[in-house]
Structure formats: C-alpha cells, structure tokens
Length: 281
Ligand SMILES: [Fe+2]
Image (cartoon, rainbow, N blue to C red):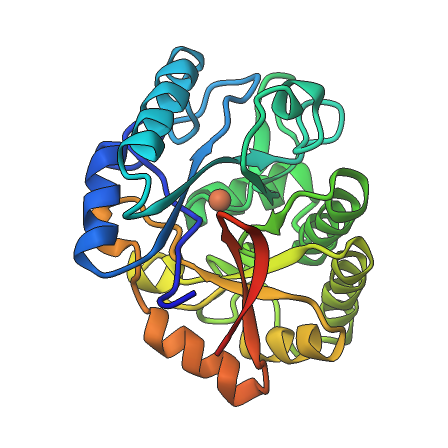
C-alpha cells in the first residue's frame, strides 16, 4: 500500500471545481494510489454548497465511469459527505444506504432550525455565525458549541458513518479566540464527549487540511491536543484534503502525516480495494 490516498473530494457537482476525471488525473500525476469522491449530499433545503437534487445521478454515473476507466491504475471509491440533522438527514438514512456507496463521511454543519426552512450553520462566515448566535443561541457561543459537539457524538453513535468529517470545524471563525477558548473546561468536556462517542462507535476521524489549504480557518481540523486525546482513545485517523479543486487533493499532507507521527500515531487508516487497512506512517 504505497502512497497515501485522499477520500474527501468535492467536484463541480456540488461546490468544487473540476470533473471527477480531472481529480483522477491529478491523483495519477501526484502518484497517489487511491482517491475517494465525497460530494455534499442533497439536503431538504437549498444551500449554495450542497448538491442540487438533479446532480446526484450524474455525480454517481460519472464517478462510477471514472472508477471503471482507471481500474488497475488508480483505486477509486465513491462516497458522499452526508449531514447529520436530527429528523432531517443522517448518514444512516435508508436512502443513503440504498445507494450502495463505498464509504460515507458524516459531518455536522448545522446546529439548529433557523426559520422553519433553513438551519443555522457553523461553516459560514463570521457574519452568519454572529447571526446564528444572536438569533438562535441568545448570544451564547458556549451553547452553540456544546450543541455542535453533542450532535457530533450523537451522529457517531446513531449513524456510524465510516469517517467523521472535520471534527472541530466549529472553530472555523475562532482564529483570534473571539468566541471561546479551547482551554475552557466546558470546551474540553464537550470535545471529550464527542471523542468518546467516536471511539465507542469504532469509526475513523479525519485530519482535514481544507482549512489550511483554502485559508478559511488557517488551521487543521482537529487541533493537535484533540489528536493527542484521540490517540489515547485509540481512535483510527486518516489525513484528508477536503479538496474542492484537483490540484488540492494532497494539500498539506506531508506536514499532517508528520504531525501524526510526532503525536505517536503509528498508522493511518485507508480504504483500499481489499477493504479498510492500516497504513504505517
Ligand atoms: Fe464538510
């Protein structure tokens, strides 16, 4: 199992740029042996980043065609990044299971109902977060953050996606510590609760380099101290790019792999054509 794979990839079918074939070509060019597609699944309300309903079948068709075309030179896996919104959508939804995907990334981007049609998101810009805090959480960042991690833990145990996406993306707009401190006991407790659920569920946590490569948060998800806790809990990890363009499918990988090594991880988990396997670091 030489070389590392990337399993977090967004094509033009959702909010990425590039055809599935162009991502596969980039993987070959970079000498990557494995590539997973993980388009943002269709949601029951409109956003400007999830797949419009009419794109789902072409996404599946085109990624299947790429998988067949590159057989023997590149291992291609077809997945989705599925939101967990209680009562609305889940990685364990029968419609998702019925697609027969190779893998599913489970992510929490939403923390509560907004106006009967939309949900408050933690993955928007600062203005959107401020609005969510003011109108949805009585101005309490702690309430929003605690809800985020509660949902993440709930998702791990109830839906058991193969991979948990960008564990602490709730810090996206907190670069300057304006909303909370990661040293606060309540924050550490919320993180620990979610980590324990992930450990119990026996699922993989990704190190997501998207915030660094795209410059949105300037930080890896999750923070180093959270990875240290994950190692204590024996949670399997993998490095993923959250790539929205072909050239980014291995962005910040060497640094992330050496970070894992420096924490004491001996392996990262990979999906291969023979199933899930640990790749020595
Ligand atoms: Fe995401």
